[in-house]
Amino acid sequence: MHAPAHFLFRTPSIRLVEREALASLPAHTLMRRAAWAAADLVAQRWPEGAIVILCGPGNNGGDGAMLAALLHQAGRCVRVWALPHAAPPPDAAQAWRELPEGLLQPGDPSQLHPEGKPPALIVDALFGIGLSRPLPDQAARWAGWARLTQAPVLALDVPSGLDADTGVAQAASIVATHTLTYIGDKPGLHTRGGGDHAGTVGVADLGLSERLAHHAHGAGRLIQASDCPALFTPRGNDTHKGSYGTLGLIAGAPGMAGAALLAARAALYAGAGKILVGLAEPDSCSLACDPLHPELMLRPAGDLLAQAGSLGVTCWVAGCGMGTGTASHTWLAQLLTRLPGEQPLVLDADALTLLAGDPALATMLVSRHTPAILTPHPREAARLLGTGTDAIQADRIAAAQALAARYRAWVILKGAGTVVSSPTGQWSINGSGNAGLATAGTGDVLAGMLGALLAQGLAVDDAARAGVWLHGAAADELVAQGTGPIGLTAGEIAPAARLLRNRGQSDARRGPGASA
Ligand SMILES: NC(=O)C1=CN([C@@H]2O[C@H](COP(=O)(O)OP(=O)(O)OC[C@H]3O[C@@H](n4cnc5c(N)ncnc54)[C@H](O)[C@@H]3O)[C@@H](O)[C@H]2O)[C@@H](O)CC1
Ligand SMILES: [K+]
Image 1: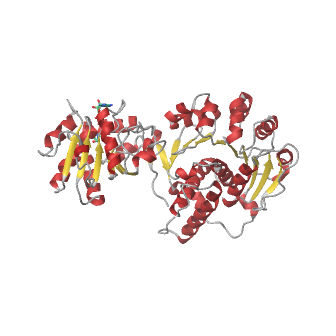
Image 2: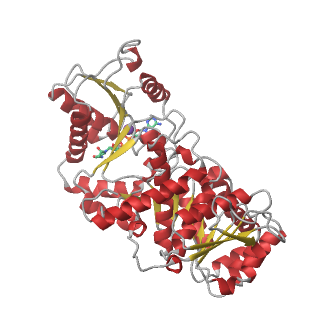
Image 3: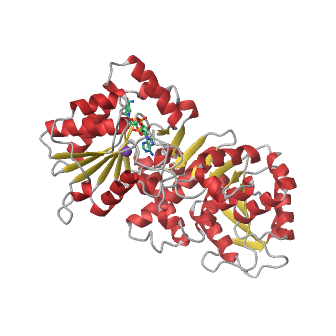
């Protein structure tokens, strides 16, 4: 449970550490360490069969050539194909000089066994963090061939064609089943196209972890279960519903009551003591109660906000299917300025659209003493920043940081590899979740869970990280049980999250050694 933080480093930090190490270590040391780390992994994971290594013109290709020599020495059947490399950098040039004769093949790997058995492993050493242009046609063809073989693909450092910082993948990128990344883990392996292209990620620190630790201040974190201990704190027996907070939810305009119920039920399953649902309907509620969960207290949004002073609400969530009309605007303004005290606040969906459309609301938000949590998907983020979705997705970390700075809020930028940014720009990427979450209503569930955690007294930074992790981990649990990713429904997430929290809590009670 208390594993050390898993940091993510952008290329400038990796390059800096690499330069420092190259200046102080004997020549070729780092590339040798990189090749040894890959050879160890290959020996453990793919101990038998033929290995194809695809090499590029730079040091990533040098890693591949040196790995080929090591595997050959170990008695493995290795074939190497290389892109043209007129003048490789010094480390790579040394690796090519050390490559035993006969391993380098002419032509194209697709000529190998056109109909026969695929290799036991294909190693992608075409490009690493130095790729700065579109993949050359030849590399694109080789990547296409690698996909067709359906053989496992081990990418060295980064799958070729995937941007190590942003996770933006070129169309012809290598699709790896495993990535062994060097020096430190990288954000692009975990957000945007990272999950689809990098497969299982391992890190070989090349003996540089101490040097890298000096650069941790600008680094991000990969959110894992061990970052969320508050989720698993055992509950005391001598407690009551008041001990676990009261959530106020403004959501569910006519025709969108489902969004309110999804969020409210998720909050219930995530452990909130009491949940008051203010349905965003002008006068009276079309829904008297939730027949599946009569525990939820439903009333018109206006009434809920008017009574707010006497209800002891410990956190507010607004936006899920809330609508963007005049009444919703008034309720949001009320939430932002006119309630007694200042409770933690989560703004989602329609609340974000309202915010993007009215600078006065944005000023109210920025004036809060305690930053709120905003949970935009990329299109909402684009509206909030006055840009396009492509610009958001081109650099999700930078977009989350820009939003957090502009609105002085915690930002949870949803999508593959959800990015969390603090108001001051400290960022993390969620390490849980899968494609099952790409379905209607999952955002409402996340908002409800975040509200429940805040209502239970988690600090805003803990709640933001724990909420996104729990939401993704619940979807992972469902996929492991065969419920998804195809056809996973938003309503199934909350019960799975409840299971995870309770399992983790009983493990915590049992003490060290119990699995989360
Ligand atoms: N310098 C070192 O000692 C170490 C380097 N390492 C490896 O080196 C990699 C970085 O090496 P490089 O900086 O040489 O970069 P890469 O090997 O990632 O590729 C860049 C090379 O390809 C060329 N290039 C870039 N885009 C191209 C394109 N579209 N078409 C054709 N050529 C293109 C560049 O001019 C450069 O020669 C890391 O990812 C890592 O795998 C590791 O071995 C650790 C130690
Ligand atoms: K690579």
